[in-house]
Image (cartoon, rainbow, N blue to C red; front, side, top):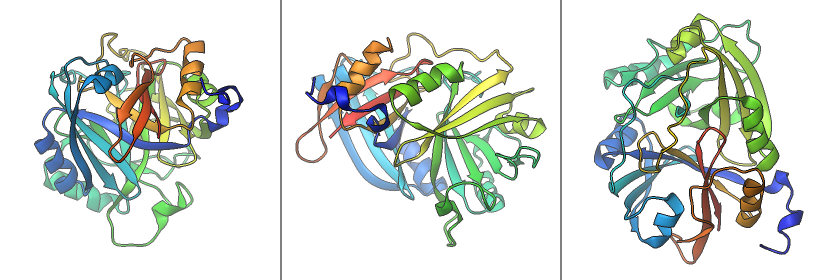
Length: 323
């Protein structure tokens, strides 16, 4: 362990949410979707294999193609396991199942964005965009719509009214799709998740809301949906939003045998100044490691990254990266 590891405070554990990783089955098809239907731009495209990546991901004999895309200031990594192939997303998945995760893409005009998605025949989750009611002070006036990519991953487009959301989402310009505000994950118990994300990792609670009503039900396509929503942030990057379904409580847990090459696997990729301190805190909290330990992974430039993959209380994966 670094000599100064014990003096790194929880508030300094995570410096940035760098990217959101999404496991896909057909990179060519996914690139067509994310760069033609959605306007993400290509940043990098590489293939990796070898012992370090096997120990990082827990997948033996792997070969991965990793394509980084950018929208606005935010990035996603599309990850195709060329070998071995993982399992598809269950066809009966619902928005309250605890393997649910999405990214929320901010748009400047919901009607135009929805028309563009409809014009490309995207798979809808919501029947149409929903405007959350004004009685909800934290969410009132927000317009949102759920849809899916070709693998069945959930995505959201979202438009903030004046006075809500970061100031950058209200800058004037011609772009329709602006960037990624947050990634949302379904959790069983907000307090247990806060102990992980706030107390262990040092993320800050940026806002809370309790959402229910017909608009929320139609947005998620979950009858009787009542959600406790908690947004957490690092100094930079998109927020992590916890979605606890207070009702209905019939969402299924993450499969215990989930592997990184399974298509429902997402990963939140974060920067840390001290990955050994992260590992120590995770061990103390008895959280699950995916990696066999801290792994020296070849960086895209010179040198190596020290990385670790672990899971939160509900099985959502994070990769902690020390450059």
